[in-house]
Image 1 (cartoon, one colour):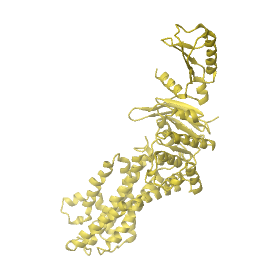
Image 2 (cartoon, chains in turn purple, cyan; image 1 turned 90 degrees about the vertical axis):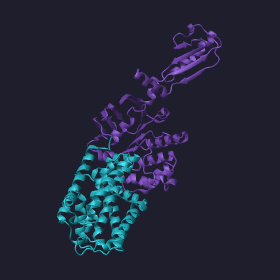
Image 3 (cartoon, chains in turn blue, green; image 1 turned 60 degrees about the vertical axis):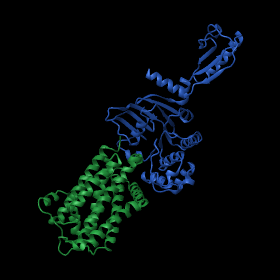
Image 4 (cartoon, one colour; image 1 turned 180 degrees about the horizontal axis):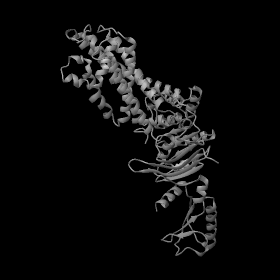
Length: 311
Length: 257
């Protein structure tokens, strides 16, 4: 199946010699939420900029909706929306003027009902006649989302959509983004909050030093690279890992006071093995004072991958 | 087929005009007041004792076209440059760059709005001048056309300046160091024919001389050189500006990373 966005061998080398994108290949499916993760300077914003016309690629091709972006940029851009990372807009304009401007800029006729719907959905309707500068940071970010939605894009880029937004508003925005996906909008977001990707994304791509390191479904990634870790503080020290625990990936701390299990695959196998481990410990009469068990998060996987790549 | 997005163009134009209206005190009243002061001092106060160098035209009336151009050029450059510089400065340019609009829509929107503001200014200045100076316009249609041409040309120049500048200092330095001095020395307050050699030849290098003389001809039917030369010089400058902007959009210079 051809993706809604097909990026092939995309390269961007700046005049300074810095290579921000180094042969990026990426395919985005229609209707999905795709999270692009990467450390600062990895090339996330450059990649978005290249698709949206802010950055001139030095190599490679971009196809959106099955058409070449270079050749058909006018009609393709009309179907793409962008919410930038920075709060960049005319702060002296009122909210409604700014959103109407965005709609007109993309060549659409004024539609008061549609604009009202967008503003209401983003809890901005009551603020529609306020100057943007008078709004809180979170509200300003919503205005940028409203502006990007004003021309009803089928493909929406959200560059760090919840950066600097408080927890409550962040969750509120996640709900808004999910709602957009439910309406059929394909969403590509970059984020520093791994939790955000874990919560919302259907698929995750990891970019580092301008290269896509990995792309996978979020659940499959968690399953493939996820781990269970369980700590068993002991009542009395042990000299070595007991023989009864053979077959399980268990290690003993240096002071002999803690058994640590690391294993599983993120699909629940780790939890089952921890349950088996507890049974064997009880049977062998090895006393432990508590169990501290946790599943690795996407963040752990992300950090492991980047550290692995760096090594 | 040449693609052109009329609604986008109108949207840009309308917003830019509204932005000027939002700052009307600064962008309209300020320049009008400054020009009126010139009329009061050079027209009404000491104008009666001055000789224009052109038969049948009082000194007060003689300086009207020059003063009008002084304001038109300065304001067109200022409006044209600020219109594109501000979104670059704030980062809001992303919206324009990611929209389905090309060079034609952008130029007509921004430069059209800048030129409109200049025309509003010109109308106010000319109306206000009637209170202080007795003048008539011999060729009103040519006058309107010439004002339009100068406004559009210098708004385009301002647009280039707004793309070139990467600081407010640079944005202000070209008008202060080049545009205003060239306009003052371009025959606003005197006829080039009154200058002795070699200053007369030196003055001929100043492109603003041709603009002032062109507009003066439109007003009074007489000037230091034929209107054709003024027209050719203005159109040449317009062509250079358009070529530069076409290159900027083709290469993305200072617009796209």
